[in-house]
Amino acid sequence: MTAPDAKIEKCIQMLENITNDNTIPRNIRKVADETLKLLNNTSKPTGFRAAEAISKIDEISNDPNMPIHARTRIWELVSQLETIPLD
Image 1 (cartoon, rainbow, N blue to C red):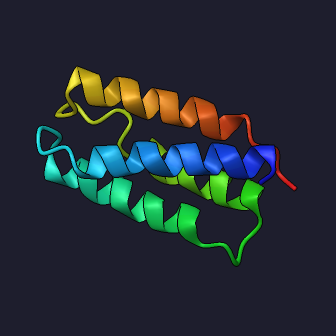
Image 2: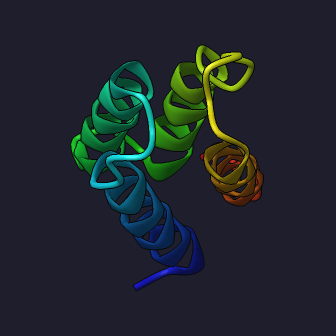
Image 3: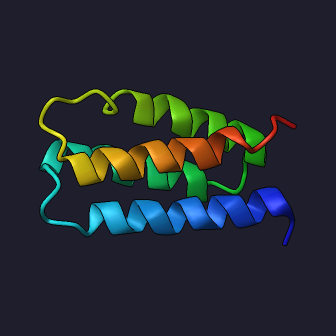
């Protein structure tokens, strides 16, 4: 497994934790689930999937209903995805 693939796997685990956390509002979990599907789409290059995921997550990153702990996880997730180079 290459380094970008390992980072994608870590991000997938983070998104799964977010989607399974009932303290996070439903609309945020829905976007996290959609982002999870983007990252799991192996037919696209790793860098492109990361860029799509960042774009999708950006939609919810400033949601005023997001709890602080969820916002911190989202920022950490984006930081991980930003380290993946475009191919």
